[in-house]
Amino acid sequence: MTTPEQLAHGKSGFSRRAFLKGSGAAAAATAMAGGPGLAAEEESSVISGMTTITLDVNGKQHKVEVEPRTTLLEALRYGLNLTGAKPISVDGSSGGSTVIMDGKPVSSNSVLAMECVGKPIQTVESLTGDSGVPHAFVDQDASQCGFCTPGFVMAVTAFLKKHPNATEEQIRDGLNGNLCRCGTYANIIPAVLDVVKGGGNG
Image (cartoon, rainbow, N blue to C red):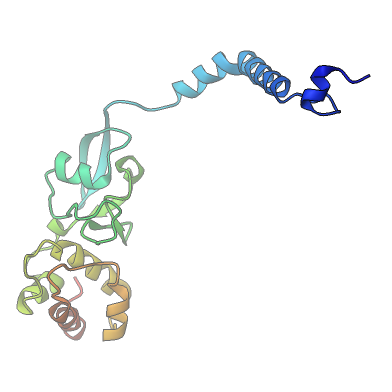
């Protein structure tokens, strides 16, 4: 015989309220069974607060205090006073925070400092004014406000180490991750070509 409660919830007698109560109780029971111990175990493995790490920057070992959320860019600028890499964009899409790590260009504001321990990092400060790329940028007046220049210089340096005889088309493709608000691309490309022609890829 169908009861009033069954009529209210259909002939099957299925109750949404009863289901929710049951599933909630099951979830609570599961949490009670393994909850406190598991939560404590997970919490103990999480690093929090300031931690001292050692970064290999420009051929030297530097100790710097960081939080787990500290980016490499922040560690370089505020921990080591290396301000060449610029915080132009949050996601690194401008290329202004470019440094070379393990021989590859990376956006230093998109990688955590703790991930960089043990990896050789090169910043624009390691390049002398008379070395190939910076010298070519000066000769070709390849900067206006200059804010994007360090990122371009590092991107070019990394690119030419892999493509020392790059063509103009390859250079344009290789640098498409770097943006210049002043629009000095017309001078940047000839600067890179000067380095290619002169062979001064240092």
